[in-house]
Length: 264
Ligand code: IPD
Ligand code: CA
Image (tube, rainbow, N blue to C red):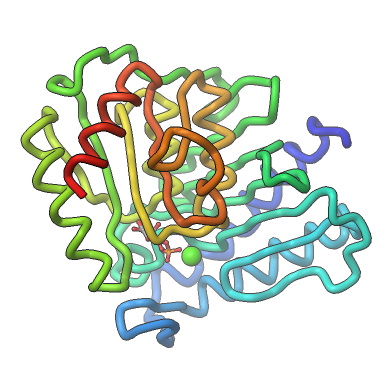
């Protein structure tokens, strides 16, 4: 598996899909709901997915594809490697004309270990990218996590599931970490939040009820930028299958895990 090639293809496709997404962002959108009334999908998500899936199938006909809006690769013959793609991460921001959303593509092996990650915000033109052993970059320049050593000086971010029952537990954690940190953000795109941790803009991020397509790319970028990405137990077991993630600059990780688990 040539990771340089996979990374280059993913970067080019993210940019191409981003261009398409921007043509929808400016105008009125058709949206439909999915799991619940707050879980929406738009024409922009579907158009982006079509570009990404067609491009990946052309470049890597044997690779598996798991995409949020359901498209895949029925011809995949190499289950050793699978792309996890989110055509728009931050669809609610996108649908409300806000600027904080991204196209996200992650490649993983059969054990769901990330190999390549690309997160692209088409509005700002910021492209975060990494491949295993190659380091992480923002628009081609190397990035690293922040050096913050105390939670009290840390800027954190989190996300809320559209499932409001799960949101109640999240509010308990929100309260605990708001008091323990410098401040807390709910920005609306998990992939971008984690890319911001990789770039040292945020110190840590956590969420539950989150899917592999939201995570795969950004976890690769955080790890290659020197950060840590785990489940709530500090391992990897539930990271891509148990819908939970904690990413940080590393130094804050154990304390953050302890406070999240203590809060509930
Ligand atoms: C959502 C965003 C949001 C997070 C949700 C995700 P989507 O992704 O990443 O920040 O809190 O859990 O589902 O639905 O816009 O792709
Ligand atoms: Ca999405």
